[in-house]
Length: 365
Ligand SMILES: [Zn+2]
Ligand SMILES: [Zn+2]
Image 1 (cartoon, rainbow, N blue to C red):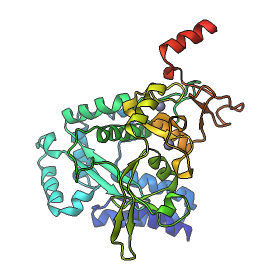
Image 2 (image 1 turned 180 degrees about the vertical axis):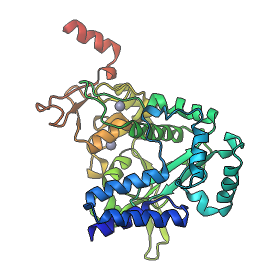
Image 3 (image 1 turned 90 degrees about the horizontal axis):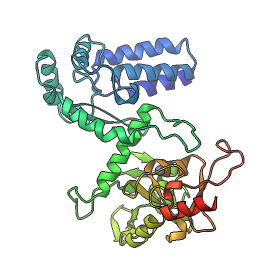
Image 4 (image 1 turned 90 degrees about the vertical axis):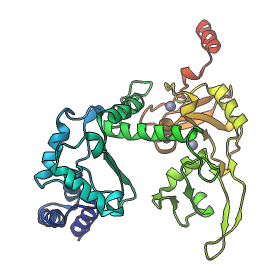
């Protein structure tokens, strides 16, 4: 029975827009495999199959497999019938929205002389598991632009004690993209929608926000968000209260409240200089303000309860066992989880110290 569930999950997670033959073949081979493997193995095989069919770039470091010629190679691969779509990527929303897209790229496929720029595309596909797959194709210039934006952000970030960055290259690239988006949306350069800067909008019931159950939070695109992620987002967010009546009609809209007002944010930046995590020097423009004691739990939005953290370390604090507190000198210090340091000795970020403090510390030592 578990195997059957696994087969169904895998089938559902296959990229949309595969042609029926591929679907049937995938299903048949999974059913065949289900006879021989336990659910865990089957899940792995299912992932493998999905990867084959979607051909996500899993190459390390963003350098990709030899890019010269690989575009043509991809196209030929697509012709052989083992691949999903002519565009080489999984069919996404675009394909659903309009059949034309499919046709266009289908024709383009035969005409191998079309310019790389004409083949450009970005597919954003929601998966049943609550995640979203993105794939795409760019011309050389756009790809170079993307790499130069992502590469500096996607570098491995070893801990200050030399522990290697546990993230895979693909995970680092994904984090880099998210960092980039945060930063872009945080600056005012983008056009406004309805007077509010476009940013992540999350809808959540008050009880769910307090962690007391209720309907899970969703993004404005309808994807569910785990409660732990919600807390991190709420750490540094503008919260607008909208009260609905029983028929889901808004009755009352409260004033948007930024949990760390601009002046306070400046004070936090003046104290922490950069991300306050030990060994990190990411500047304030890349950082979020973290509540040491979450405001949801009654923590105050005051200097002694706030620390500056870059997106990566904000995630680390919320999800990976590190504890941050404000020390006796009213500066942040970080207590590693026992699996990082069994003595759990607090650490500080040398980059967060003003030069004069550093020099003073040096003369004392
Ligand atoms: Zn936080
Ligand atoms: Zn950091």
